[in-house]
Image (cartoon, rainbow, N blue to C red; front, side):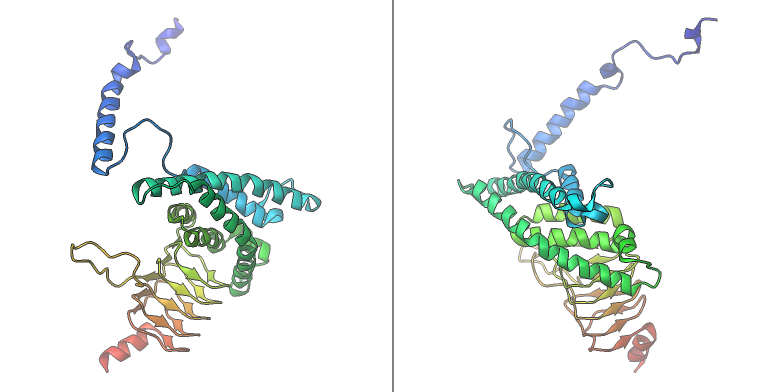
Length: 316
């Protein structure tokens, strides 16, 4: 029997004709052109304008290895080669980061304020500052790891915590993203945060200020807003929201940005699963917020807020 009889049939015409690819390409070009015109973007030939999520994913993965070489570095690494690996990795990573910083600064210069000849020097200066912040990032992360180990009776070692816990991974990304945010490259910072968000289900805005020793247990569904301030040795469980209560608008009806609209959480607060805390409220030192409660007012230091206490306050 002719083997060709068993082969699937395909039309003889070119694939571009079969799927109208040329037409789709033309129409997509028209849509892009209309978008760029509406957003006052250039249609001139040129290279990439925006930072790359793929490039930043690799940068962050390599930074994790440089921060924790014997646990998050390459599997064949030996301790006697640790410093060489860290030095080589950082040299490569920081040059890659420089390229991404340059892209964001160029983008901002083009669309937000006039460009200047000092852009390259500014990019170098920012990456130099970022590099010098890495030891402090590591010190903060060490305290986050210890907090997770001490806070979870199921944790058998600090190494298990670092290798396995999504809350620790989220904090590695956040500590890096927060430095980038404060250095003035918020787009890079947001991309770094969203990479972690996609991997862990924990959504921490890079603008949030978080003290040492934060433990996010389980973590899925946690949301921490941009202007949140969290003290030291705080514990947060899954599905907790530290969000905004309202979004004020200006005279034109546009949402005002940059206002302090998220909670302040003082040292040693515990927030159990499903709790929602909205607005610029303050949770006092050592307060315990029970599961599934809704908080829109200040909580006194040491207070214990549960659904039962809230129902009691409501009926009084």
